[in-house]
Amino acid sequence: MKKFLLLLIFFFCLAIGGCWAVKTCFLSKGKLVVVTIEPGASGSAVAKTLKEKGIIKSQFFFKLILRLTSSARDLKAGRFDLRENTSSFEVINCIKSGKCTHYEKVTVLEGWRSEEIAEALAERNITDPHAFLDIVRQKDLEGYLFPSTYLFAENTPAQKVVDEMLQQYRNNISPLFKQYKTDLTEKQVLTVASIVEREAIVHDERPKIAAVYLNRFRIGKRLEADPTVQYALGFNLKENRYWKKGLTYSDLRTKSPYNTYRNAGLPPGPICNPSKESVLGVLNPQPNFEALYFVADHGGRHVFSRTFDEHRAHIRRIRGK
Image (cartoon, rainbow, N blue to C red; front, side, top):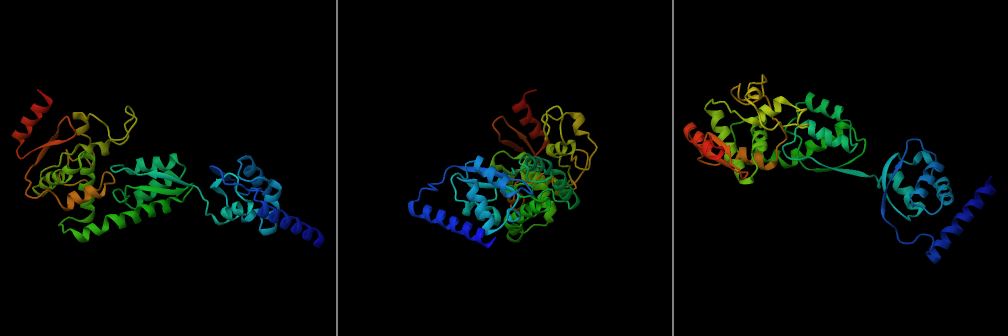
């Protein structure tokens, strides 16, 4: 047995020495390939996969090096970013250490509700969408899932995904509450910001839209915000989307604590996950802005009014009779 091992080591050293001397065994690396290592895969199975993908030159040398330096049990399961024509040494080290783990990129857009985030995560096989939503709902985290671009490994635990989004919230949003003084609670700020996020199209209008809703809230006038009704309605099968377009009068009568056409004050919580800009709009609304109404024009902007008569006149001018 010892003699056999010595022979293996001898041939191993001979092969490596030859490669080092003439630099012909492993030329420049090729394109990046995503390789899946199944749980419990044998060394032979891994070697075969790597050979088929063009990552290694020889299954024999891969298995030999794996046997001499570690074992198949040391190789992590998962998906890995590896380059064609890579040395077996480097491949084994990458898979063992997890340094080559493949990360999926997912962009959480401003104004998405938690269900939309869960769907995006599921599409990339990042985490269980049901487990993700369970955590969000149990801990009342709608509004705190910071919109950004994230990198996650496949099959990441849902709690880890949530924690990363909350950390980005703490990094980007939490400092704003120290910078700007407000008589609103943090949740109230996020609630108004979430409505602003769904209403605003042009960036510079966020402070104005925020001012309108804050004005209405502070005088006890119902917000009458369409996005709150859209949130209450949930997924629309006909349109195959959230945020139903073209709300009807029947929709506006929907019984829900989130429907601000029926209920005074703010809804129970945020209706989506707002951007930093929308939160800033609520914390620093347009000063001395007394408007109580606004209507969208045909160019993505809004026309603001102080009185209902002005508001109706603007509606007639923009939409016709």
